[in-house]
Amino acid sequence: MPAIKLYGFPLSGHSHRVELMLSLLGLPMEFILVDLKQGAHKTPEFLATLNRFGQVPVIDDGGAVLADSNAILVYLATIYGNGRWLPADPPGQARVQRWLSAAAGQLHAGPATARLATVFGAEVDTAAAINRAHALLDVMEQQLGDSRFLAGDLPSIADIAFYTYVAHAPEGNVSLADYPQVRAWLASIEALPGFVGMPRTMAGLQSQ
Image 1 (tube, rainbow, N blue to C red):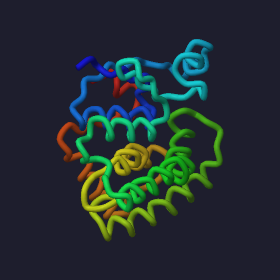
Image 2 (cartoon, rainbow, N blue to C red):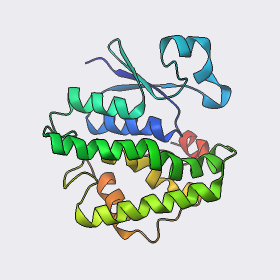
Image 3 (cartoon, rainbow, N blue to C red):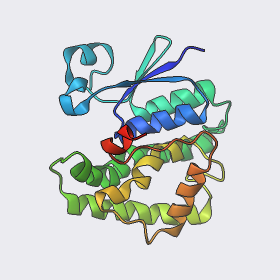
Image 4 (cartoon, rainbow, N blue to C red):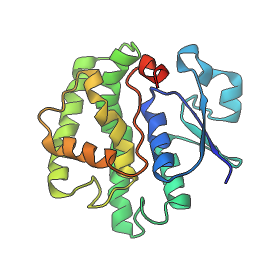
């Protein structure tokens, strides 16, 4: 099959969600760099043809152009996942959706925002973001004490939506030391066939 084009930025956790999902599904991918630091995601062409919100990631799957990382995860799981990554039963789907909502809410406001300050130099309230991150990690720790993965005992797109920003939370000065269940969950994701990590710096990317 033709490669799915992924428009993204290497240090974007949202971009990495999609890259990781594509790799876990064994799908061919062409990564197209969108240089956020140069404002490439805000150009008239990008806004008109890829994403009117001016955000990455965006995929082009044979002419189907889709934006928003969580929406892309749902699409990929539905089209290519063979029922593995998104449950078919309504309760299972609801459990996954609950965590996707948290990924767009608490995860973004906590670990992702704390990391913005250190990695991208964004002006944010880092203390508040770190506090929100630990509140979220407390909930995750409890959940992962009851089930191996966030939405049950099998991995789903809920885990893929959460993995990157939790794994890279220490970059935003959010320690994972007090969360053994979360650390074990990260290791379980990293052990999945086809796992690919995200570079921690642009220098790390260039050395690969």
